[in-house]
Length: 219
Image 1 (cartoon, rainbow, N blue to C red):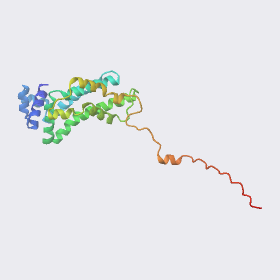
Image 2: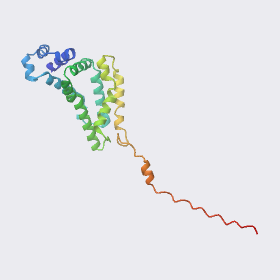
Image 3: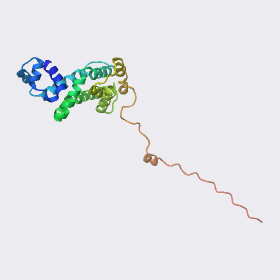
């Protein structure tokens, strides 16, 4: 934990310019100890992302009705992105993305992308069990995360005030209803009658007009 905490601090300040011996010094361990745990800064970055994911998706591992689980997950996401140390981690990722896009992509796959996959798999399982009705779980997972977080990441990047705790709790309570409300599966539209189908409908028979009576001629 000390190595990852040190890496978080240095990556936020220096990006990939942070050296392994600097990480070791700040963590209070030898450089060889760092290399025994992590072969490169890429592995450190992936471990950081993976640790955050485990903390975020922990509610999906527990029992509970969908509303409760999603509300807990939403509040976890909001508290994570609104925490004071998020400013440094967001800026660190931004620095890394410029210096080494391949590492930035690896961080995304190990972190945010993995959390979306986990949520999507959970939504699919809840749908299979009949507890929810989600047509496209993977798409719903990304939409749910965006609905919950709003501008949270942007606020962290710019270091502007985040939403207060009471608003986080209110948003966390409201967001799950977008996925758990009863009705037809999300992502599917109610079928409409197309022009082609209307053209195939049987036509009404024409109304027959009675012939007019013959007009008598003058005598």
